[in-house]
Length: 446
Image 1 (tube, rainbow, N blue to C red):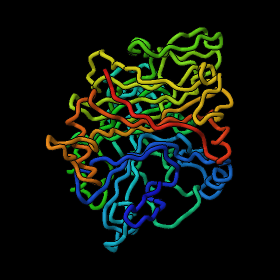
Image 2 (spheres, rainbow, N blue to C red):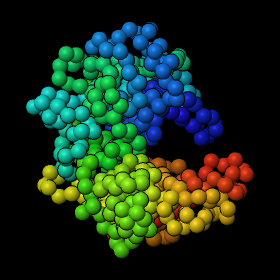
Image 3 (tube, rainbow, N blue to C red):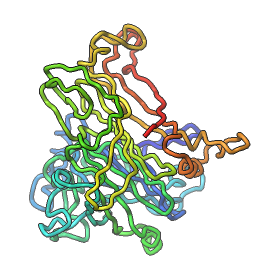
Image 4 (cartoon, rainbow, N blue to C red):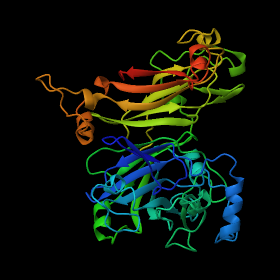
């Protein structure tokens, strides 16, 4: 993680959240002026050629408490948050007021993981996170706790073998020898599906976030009574009561999709002549009726409620899909969310891609995958009063978030990122650029 002091134009590497690599980190409402709370999403150790650090971990630390060898920690982790205390150095002493990282609670803090009762009679029936979601509908609840790991950043840069990412292969602190376990994707020994994007719940009074998974599910984590817990703690609470609710399990979504007259595919035998975007052709002769590889995920706050924008990153041969949900709700009432088609792009069998269409000209040598990635609600920034003046001042992030709630979903302007991985030739290649792409603006009509 990096934190940038925009005023001084200084980029800081941050070690307090672990150095395990992340896909996305978002700020949550801490409900307390002395703390910062972040939701951490992503890799938990996605390093190339990790064997050296795995071997070193086993050599220097010996076997895990359960007697097993340490395994590659990549994607062996639960949902995570970070709580940092403002104004403190790594040892808990007072920091100079000019210290940017300390002022923002990024030197002294604890990482917490989501832990649940994994007994067969418990809320998950003893199932790890990925398998649990294969048969769950909207509204399924998993009560749990965010528990602090033993590891804490001490300000000294060390090899990854010493990082907090490995803590999710051990007993939950305070629950040793019990059925309470870290709710990892596939247990303590196997990597689960990757969690990519998360998004904060910005409704006043909530410390909560929505978390996606490349397995095709997403849900809502709520941290309960955080103000009381922080007030009662010396520095950091050992644990926080929490709840998780499923929005979408890894289930067939074809009946939940409204293409709104769009989403036609080029019919090819390699995708069994699939003709529209109700389903995903993630590779030749492979059709999926679930969400496939949810990558981008952002919750849009509107006058009507919360909506989720979902961006797949599956390598869809016929064009990557993007959807916006109906109003998010997780009542356990056998009613599933709806997903409205927004756009599709790329794919090696997409006729425009196959014919070399690209911007700039000659940038597209062949058909290939595209990836929608990144979502920003512009409505709070652009909102105006009757006088014609902008409602918020520049750099007032809190006011931006509140202004978003006053704009109806169909009046929103939403910025979207699109990466065109196949557009790598011509001017793109000559300039040694990464790839082609586009920044788009979307106005919902749902």
